[in-house]
Image (tube, rainbow, N blue to C red; front, side, top):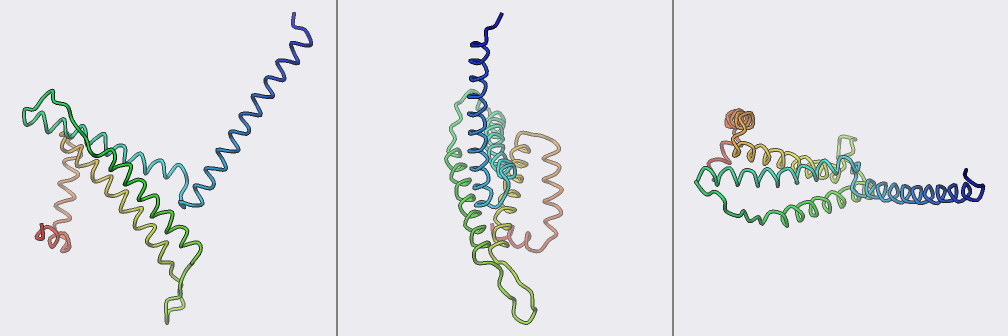
Amino acid sequence: METTFERKKTMTENIEGLKAVTIGGVALGTIVKIFESLVGMSAIAYMALVALFILDFFTGIGAAVAIGRKKGVVGRIISSKKMPRIIGKIAVITIVLTAMNIFAKEIGAHSIPWTGMKFNYYTWIYYCVLNISVLTQVWSVMENLSDMEVRWATVTIKVFESAAGKIWIFKYLKKKK
C-alpha cells in the first residue's frame, strides 16, 4: 500500500517533469517564432528546403557509385567535397533570405511612377532566390536519379530538355557552352 508521503513525492516529481517540459516547449516555440519572423518562412518549409539539399547530397553519392560501376571501378572509396559546400549553400541562402525578408519588412514597397501601384523589390528577390534554389535542387536530384538509371527520372529529364530546346533562351545558352 502506498503511503501519503510516497504519493506526494510522486506528484512532486510529476510536477517537476511537467515544468521542465513546459519550459522546454516555451523556449523552443520562442526560438521557432523568432526564426520564422527573421527568415520569412515556416520552420516546416525551411526543413523541406534543407531536406532537398540533403537529398541532393545522398543521390549524388548514389550517382557517383552508379557511374563508378559503369566505368568498372568497384570497391573504391568515394571521397566527397560536397558536404562542406552543402552547409555553405544552406548558410548563404538562409542569410540572403533573412536579409531580403528584413529589407522587405523594414523598407517596404516603393511606388511605381505613373501607375499608382506599389512594388516591393525585396519580396520579389526573396521569392526568386527561394524558388531558384528549390528548382535547382529538384533538378539536381533528378539528374542524380537519372545517373542511377532510374527510368522515370531519365524520361522526365529528356521530356523537359526537348521542350526547353524549343525555347529561344535555352538554345542561346546551349550554344554558349
